[in-house]
Length: 478
Image 1 (cartoon, rainbow, N blue to C red):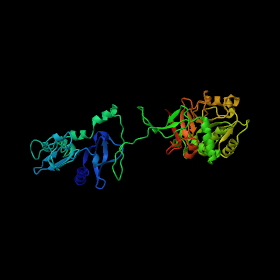
Image 2 (cartoon, rainbow, N blue to C red):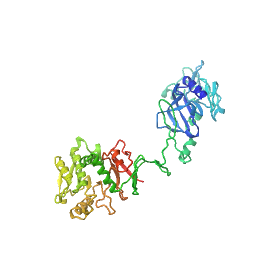
Image 3 (cartoon, one colour):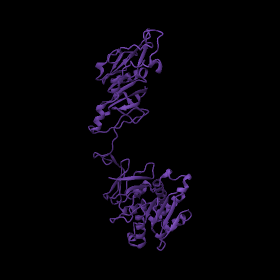
Image 4 (cartoon, one colour):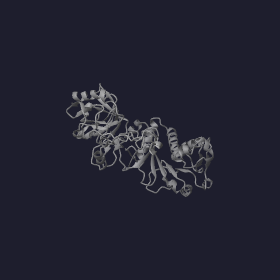
């Protein structure tokens, strides 16, 4: 450890700004980059614009501890041109000063060499020759022809001026360039020869390298991207999803879903609060599907998108009406279908009263729905508690209209059913945790309805939010 720090301390005065190659062993690999700083207190060295095993790192700077450095090579990639008294240029090639396997080819004069238990570092003197020997300089072309001082200038000189060839004598440093690219390591990663993945963590106060690990119940390794389990349910129903980040989201049976909503009521999260949360999140998703800022701008009011909401007389219908109210508030042309000859739940009546204060239009007959295709259809016809609604004539006529309109369909909180869905949906939005929906072409999304972790815990669900910075996220079948 003492010898390693002598090396780092020596580099603090001589090698800041130099390009080096640091070998951290078989586990961490080889890094190349420019020395940006050396910390005397924590005994660390930092490289900027780093490369890892020949591949550019996604971070602008990495930091290494002296104890982890197995071998270190200096890559002198700066050309030095010395003007001679005779007016000729003497150029030195870029040189690679190393302590590893290329060390035997170096013909550079060294001012000193410091060696530790893991390798050695050699410091070349400034202005030395390159690793392949001294390069013979080529005299510059004469600016006159026919040997006369007053002769005509060549055509090239007349066109391009003096000094066009003065830098052509410097050879390209192939050795130094190849040292920045470790082909063996790259091809090893491509071929899958390396079975262990390591993550290098960098700290400002200390440089520590460690491999992130997870408990046995937190990850699944099956030759696929790592998936993480942070949500567990007391009853496995055989259907699981995962987020874009690899977090597994299990589905829950409808009975557990009901218990979860009942627990939310006891905690003060009333139905009205949940309706508002679903309305905001589903309308935000609908606005994105309609084109977002590319379609909805104050200067584009003459091309406002049209959305048709198909709602039944139940809680699912109330969720759709809440979504329609928020869409109307964002200058969307909203047409709400709701049958008026059946008894409405109180929540539906309340949402209809709020919707009537917007510019949205409400109809109760299929004949009043648009005959031409609209921009989006939002389906909230189905009910978890009453599957017999599908047998009623008004339901069948509305479902038939939706399938013939050729508009894409977003289904909000659809029930679990072994029967085919009456309305073919392109997108499905589940609430809180997904139900075990049948495999189909519909893309499944998950909506955050604002339930705290303690509410999930009350019904036996170990819950960690999968939403991150979003309120609606896509889910993928596992």
